[in-house]
Image 1: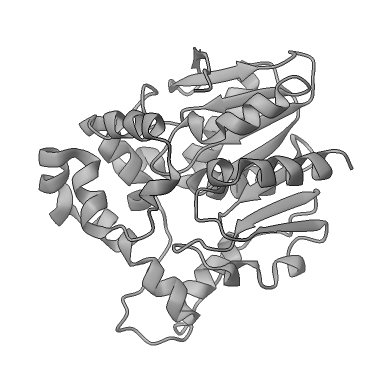
Image 2: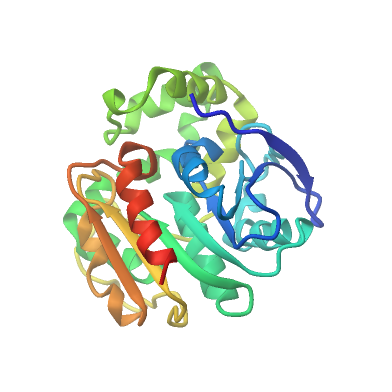
Length: 298
């Protein structure tokens, strides 16, 4: 089992994060952001692989595990989650970095890259996390993506809160999630997550990522067309070098999310990983490491 030591880092906004900080202090920096419902260990294979040559920073993000877990939904709006990353870099004395994200960590990484490109963020590496412009349209137009995203409506529904209080996050996951592959996760890693999911404050902290997001997830009964007055997020093109890694057997996020990415990312590299589900950093670590190696060596 890969061991990763953490330290406590206080941010200027009062949030405290448990953070892995491995590798030479003066080396190029990779900031790794995990997704839901995991933790910094999402990136255990990448940190072990790259930390001899890169400074690898991997926080448990706000709401997760031992990091600060404010309970109000308003504490998890995208600007605050993105702001945590820049404040973490400030606290660690890091001027520029490559942002690496998966799932919700990838969603935050898109925001970090778009807001800090060139000035703070040198490169972006995103694994199975959709670009916000493309995803918002697919939720309206693509039947498969909309169907796969209905679990978000359940995560946002306060009617499920009593179930969470009674059984933790495990109860809700068993009720609504259809994209897990239990056989793909080592038993010791699953035990770590199941323990995390017992913390009721962490349960609601994690779910608040969904509840605070402005993303609209239509019901399956609504028309498969953009609604009148639809306006995509007013985002600039992402002009820094960007690697998108996509596992093709992701049941939550189909590969249609890759279409037309090159229209908003001029310097785009796409690495497709066949026969792999959503959690590509640890389901196919060699493929992820190889794609990152080639990209970072440019």
